[in-house]
Length: 481
View 1 (cartoon, helix red, strand yellow):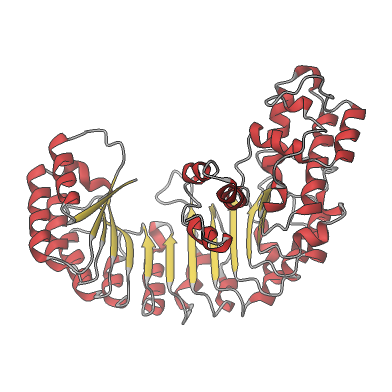
View 2 (cartoon, rainbow, N blue to C red; view 1 turned 90 degrees about the vertical axis):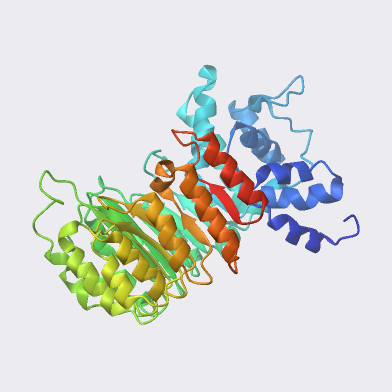
């Protein structure tokens, strides 16, 4: 391993990007391993007081001297590792950590600075919070090349005078930005400046603030200025202002391949999505709050959905009120032929899945029909490419025992994942063992992964022993979630 190049070692360490404990252990092997792993760890740093301490240590000397002068941080007399208020100007960090950062959250940085000063009553002033935050952002803009940026002005209200887009180096830092997450109430000037710098954002995630009067021209400009927007997520709650950006989206009708619309109490037409003919992934999840059944009686704004066709659609996640489920069925009839992944909590849609989705590989659905067992059996037989299924139960007579029996007898040859969800607790140890024995005899092409709920309220030692036994035998793999 010591003779591997940095590129080879980096490829290996990339497999552990989500396992920070492993990467931290790599820091301690030797300096070579440390140099490679520290870059990965700092691409997406978890913002904490400890990380803030490191960021202050990384500040340029001129920034530190400025903060000393105004009293935001204090010059140390005795070196102190944990006290961010007395960060040393003489001791430089081992690495230029900030230059490794690819992901930056404006809100998280501001929040941790604010939290720190709130714990220091002697310096608990808005001015000091803003000054330190400004210097940190100035540092980021000067040495980083950010790929993913988040600026949400929702839970944490960020002052307008913290305007990172005007710092020297911002154009270089953000010119390769590929993903941007924001709330609609961010200062319009920030959006305007970004629209002049960032023209290649591929993924845009917007949460519409219900207290905003309208969508700013700056946000519209940012949307219009993109050259190759591929993914768009719109989230809103009790706000109809998202409709203001529809004209700005028209430019991206040919490039957009992923669209997510989530929210509550929407009564604006969804007709604008029909122009995105190259969509490959679509999620529409809308809920309605009302004392009456499934919310408001007027759902005419969903009518057009049943006429839309997306010939390239591969993944569909759709959750709408019960009253419009017939429209969802019609939509699936028009767009199910090429689907490989389908998710829905609509109880009456499984017959349409059975009839119109022959290429499905992954299915997450709710069984609420009277003959759910028969319907599941038919889906498994007809969807011959099915690899994974997650059945939810809502008013269904399908038992856990019957579920295992149907899967055992009817699953396609490439089937390898079953999410037992709320079925596991009701299963008897005997039923589980019979399923595993049958699976062992059948010797399927792929190892079956059983996904069960972690921390079950009713622990059963006998069932635990069975799944452990057959996991050791290589018959099943258990994943607890």
